[in-house]
Length: 118
Ligand SMILES: [Zn+2]
Image (cartoon, rainbow, N blue to C red; front, side, top):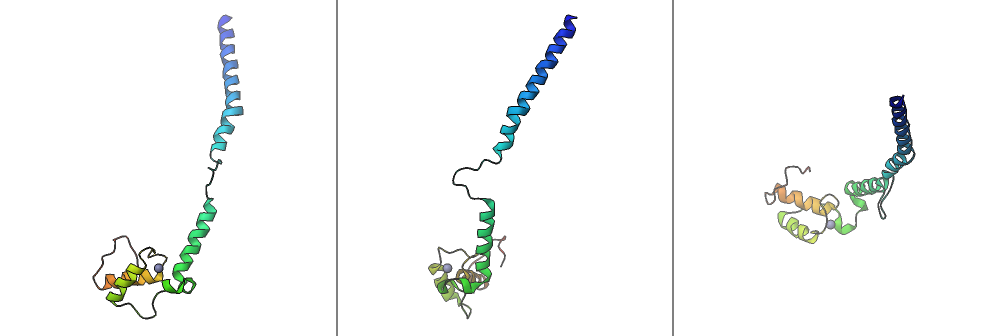
C-alpha cells in the first residue's frame, strides 16, 4: 500500500510540474520570437527598401543626373575619372560608376571578382 501511495504522489507531482510548464514556461517560450528589439526595422520595410533601390539601378532616369550612365560609352581615361568621382557610390546603385567599372574591365584595367555579374 505505501508503494501505491508513493507512486500516486509521483504522478500527482508530475502532473503539477506539467501544468506549471504549460501555464508559465510555454507562453514564455512562444513570446520570445515575437519580441522585437528597440530600434529594430521590420523585415517588410527592409524588403521594400531593397526593391526600391534595385529599381533605381534599372531606371537610370530616376537617378540624379551626375549618377546616370553616360549617353556615349566612357573611354578608359574618362572611366578612371568617373571611378574617382563616384568612389563613395556602389556599382549596383550608381549607373555612372557601373558603366565606368565595366569600361575599365573591358579595357583590361580592372579585374572583377569572380562572383560579380555584369
Ligand atoms: Zn555615383
